[in-house]
Length: 304
Length: 335
Image (cartoon, rainbow over all chains, first blue to last red; front, top):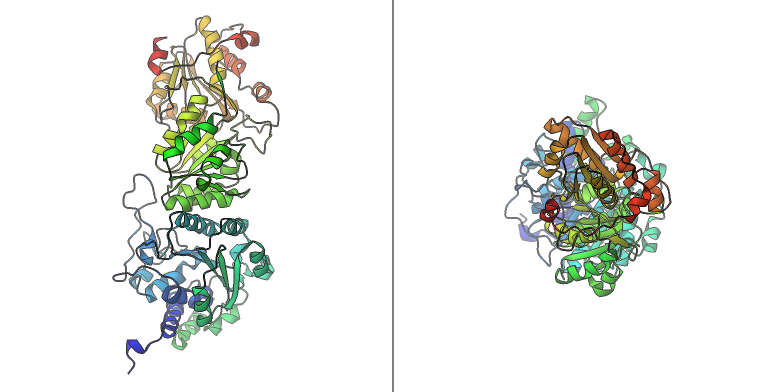
């Protein structure tokens, strides 16, 4: 008999990571489609961020996502972002931003596993009138800015980090990113500005799964030497195995002086679901060819 | 007519003195947009963002979410053309108080097509949550700051720099969604904006001498566009309505007036003076206003064709006209 107190933080990260993969695979099987490879690559990074690295405010009980109440406007008094899922704000607390909004399904799974979103939130995914949108918007659980147009998330988070510095807040600004989106020029403008304005309260973690919509990044538009490029732009860069939770946690504790930090988490888009390897290089969105394939993936649930 | 120089330079510093939440952002055009004195006076509230406008607009959205009010300063084209997606998604969608000061509207620069904002009103008007203002004189440039500050959400301003005429006395300030009446009359309703107002004032003075009554309004709010004075003036005009703007005839003041007239069922001739669906090129303002027919002589020609009368007005006569600052609406109406 193991009591809760015997569980280590590593056990908890592994439980959350496994839960993320399970929930996204379940969803993909049920709905014949899903961002499954993203769950496989980023399960550990999101799990370790949410349970070990980030200092987020607590949630009383898992939140049931509200229905969509309209876009922001002067007249819309009921509007709110999905930031509440990351807890109340505080000067010394961290903030989280998901840059590739296409990872929303994975983030929702992480919120359920960490007790921040009620499981019924997953059922609302991509349903008409729901805030649990396919490509997350700022009203979607866990999100608070518009990042679906890739390139804008990092800049907006940098503005927030700058504001927090000006206000004397000590909490950090965490940005989860994908490797493919660094093909976009705006992200480089953002890194340049983060370095120039010495935003050492910013930490970026990049899910380096080597994949993008059209296939392997190297075949679409290669970005290497990525770490050298980031360093040349003024960032403190760490390269780490994105499935090594202890290594991730150790770097997450580090706080550089006078420069922003970027963690390149090298990940496997087929991790724990080997079936996915057959689909290489088309991994961006999984839709089954026939029912037989679907059954195969359903049985993979037993292995997780 | 009084000509003022670098109005924004000192005015912004004075105005922002007790507003610590106002941050000024520059994209390498600091003295070109007259914010060098602000930079030197309040260095902690000045953010240099480099020639990277897409990042600047999204970054400003982030600052605004945390309670600051970013005042972005650059040439207008680099806001609405270079960074349109960022304006739309990082600023306009979330209805954030990011205030964008776009310099070099229309043909006010010899910088050519790359620097001339000829369709900015059309583009920005289409964005939900956006307020659009345009300055036409020194008093506008001074008083626009307070309107910008008091208007919630994003605001885009067509701003003027350098030598600017003072058409309105300093107490006759810009008001949100309220045009200033410059002249009264029942023959023509004339709506002008920006630098075209000065041109139009010369023309209307010459026309007045010849007995033509022009209801002349200086429009500074392009969005929202619900000022009841517009429809009232248009409805009262015997011969028709004329709009005159330093912008494409598509999507700007002329279009906004056409929409108001059409939706109210007002069937009257409307002449839209502006850039006739064309880009311009690099040359002096005076030369370009004449070349693209957005000057006083072009206005007179349009009025002549509407009222089917020739007024034999020469450029020499227009050049001699003295423009005294207009005091208040009441004063103008009494004239």
